[in-house]
Length: 332
Ligand code: UT7
Image (cartoon, rainbow, N blue to C red; front, side):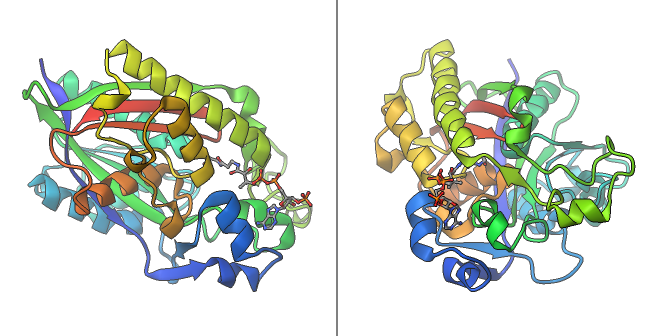
């Protein structure tokens, strides 16, 4: 039976490093608070006007193609997961396709925030297994730094997020012991307003007003404690579900590559699953939360550093705004 293999991964982050101390010069926060509560030391921001997620994605796709042994021109579908598209419309996927010279290649944007990579993987897996496409570029890319509130009021959200992009090139394989084994995804919109960006909104007449800017509804807002509670409940739950359905024990996992929202969340998820800490991948200290990019970015780095290799069994859980959550089990 045809399976979907991750043929290669790539990532790209902008050069500009922003430390916790840099943020503490702009609003009331501290390196100590941020590190203690989140594990983040620094993050990357774009520093050139006009750099969108699709721009960050170009080198990520090129790197993923090199690692996959695939020419960029062979990509036959793009799935672009982002909550911070270059523009309101059209989606980042079409801009990326144009920048890669892929005229005519379909481009699907998906809006599933921190679970975006898993939602995209589920769609891509179905497309590949049914024979529809053979070389899918599944991209997660975000530019958060132009859309967060650098004032005391926004500090809880602003310290968390960073810019970056990553890509997985997916294609069919007949190798028994390789590929996407399972992807389980969920959503519960009763939590939609616990982490959201309210305005501009198509639902309001007019969709943008001076008042919205003044009352700060143009910046993301979050009920951090509630999101933390849900994340530490749902990520282990969905992970267990995937492992049990596939008869896989945690001892068989080479690595857990969770979404990077908070180091404390991922330590708790590891503990609840009974996975030793050295098997849980963290790179949040360098990049903060890059949302849809975070899982492929962490996996790409783990492979680059020799921590993950062909044949390894990897579990990838995520939780985020929506609420949306899920977990994927993949053999590299
Ligand atoms: O990608 C998925 C979505 N995001 C997440 O998964 C995030 C989930 N939530 C979290 O990671 C945590 O809730 C945070 C890291 C956001 C916050 O940590 P916390 O331990 O839940 O802190 P808190 O919100 O309960 O705030 C504790 C204190 C408050 O002050 P008081 O009321 O105790 O005086 C906050 O005002 O920390 C204050 N605070 C800050 N202080 C310095 C909040 N943000 C900051 C800040 N710097 N950036």
